[in-house]
Length: 85
Image (cartoon, rainbow, N blue to C red; front, side, top):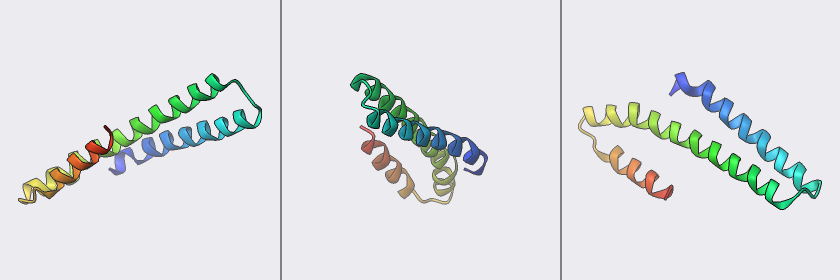
């Protein structure tokens, strides 16, 4: 996953900034739907980040485990995907 570490950190720093912005919006008593829009944008970015992590896990950990005869990683991925539903 190291090649994507910088991208993951970038996404998470953006999400962090978005959340800090939401907190400021609440402190400023901003319009509720504007706050909701920011939260939805943050959630979408976190989902994108998580999907990249899962993709890397499949591309590396799961493929390596299967090559070595270990199918347990497949079950882990299925459980992780079920959490997203």
